[in-house]
Length: 248
Image (cartoon, rainbow, N blue to C red; front, side):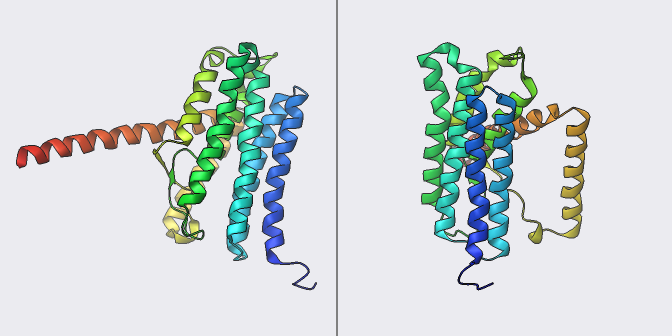
């Protein structure tokens, strides 16, 4: 096939477009009150979001256009879709306050992505994230809905914690708390690759054994780890400052 007719960028952009499509499907299922399927399609969108970066690097087609398209996709799949899901599945009962709380995911997600694009100097070398990545926020919400939404409501005590969690995740996206990027296997030693592979297998086995319930705890643990690490660094920094003052 003629390369000019079928450029390599078409493949990567198609994968990104599938991210958008899954976000759209999620909203359709939310509108039909099938919240678990809506949550599943948000997770599928996250898989495509991961794949498009891998495909772009493999084909060496990383570009500013791809970065912008990826961000627009994320606003739909990890901003609008989870906001709509949260409102329809739970927050609707709080009326105007529910609308405001649900919209925080979309608003702060868009702000987070805009900041990310501005800060991204080298599109081929992405480091750790400043603030909670928007897909991680969306997956955390989705796994909670998949696991604990039953008989038309969020199971106790997660129903009480649902809105505070939404507000926390929203503000974390625009915070300066550091979250680690996914490790690049090509830069890892063989032992590290084996270790990461074993961890992945263990996580998959636990997911199967617990019917997926463990997934919510895995992702909420990642979210909380970033907060606890930031607090630890602040304490260490404060102690170091006090020691320097005493020494001087």
